[in-house]
Image (cartoon, rainbow, N blue to C red; front, side):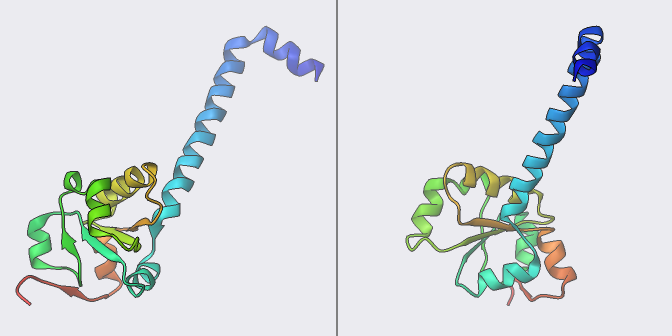
Length: 142
C-alpha cells in the first residue's frame, strides 16, 4: 500500500489518467447495461406483441408504407412524447418501438424510460433484424 501512495505522489498525472480511464470504462459499461434492459430480441418482441402491446414504427414513413410490423402505427420520433404515449396507452400496456435498424427506437425508448415510462421497449436491430428472422410484415397496400 505504501508503494501505491508513493507512486501516486511521484506520478500524479499518470495516476489521474488511470483513474479517469477506469471511470470512463465503468460509465460506458453502465450505459450499455441500461440500453440492454429495454432492448428486445425478435423472439422476445413476439412475446411482447402477443401480450397486446402497442407498436409504434418510428422509422422512415416511406419504408413504413412498403412494409412494417403488423399492427404498428407510424409516428415521427419527435411526436411520440410522454403525453402522447399516455393518451394512446390508457391501460398501461407494454409499448414496442421499431425503426429501420434499431438506433432511433433505442434512443427514443431510453428517453421515454428516463421520464418514468418503464414499459417502453425496442427491437434490437430494428425492422432489418425482424425481416432477417423471417417474421411477418404488412404494407399499406394489404
